[in-house]
Image 1 (cartoon, rainbow, N blue to C red):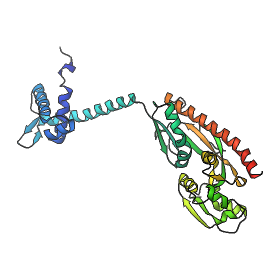
Image 2 (cartoon, helix red, strand yellow):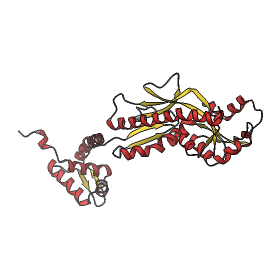
Image 3 (cartoon, one colour):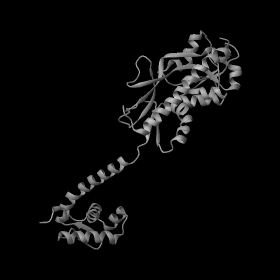
Image 4 (tube, one colour):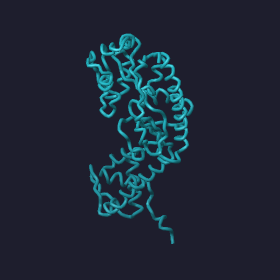
Length: 316
């Protein structure tokens, strides 16, 4: 007695039948399957001969399902969908998943992207996806492998590795800084670049001016909702910004920004943290994580070296 699998119709013939039944058109089915009309017609004819019954009633311009065709379509159509989904998922498992790193827009633009090219030169085989967002993403739900987060020092994220704290200092282009930092009050003669983020009062000029005891108002203010845009405006000479030193170190080192070091402040309440989604990540995730840690250590060392130099420059 032959095995039941032997009596099953060919898959190509079933696929041609399902495509034609869904569209009730041989021509449309051929377009969907990237075949010729005659090829689909032959598949359906071969299936009818195999089953010994007609599946379509044909007229000059249309086709309709016979009762046998309707019965086969109800069974075969969802089965073909599930088979296609399974095949796609199996192919997906064989592809190399990109390594996804998440951070705020500011951290991404000012810290990650300027350094990422060096990693890709070392590891061109690793696909990297950068997910910049100012909201705290669910790493598991959004398929994020690594994240750099700015969080309270007292309650760090779970499984987080400490990177460095935050220092804030007034910064401007060299031309603006020559006037803005000339004296205690000259800052108020400039446009102050402000961040529209109520969660970070230490990044707002209102708090800085209030603590300085000055009752005067600045010449003007310009607000931004993205920190990287605010810093770019400072580089372009549009005013004075409150610079987050770990993020703008390259700009300070190459002179695109000048800092008023005597007004530098440490923000001990918040720190930068590195989080990995899985305890045992994939090899390509480990590559990026380890490389990030070397970059983060380098930033920490630069911060430690830069502070004494800043004190000497300010006469502190």
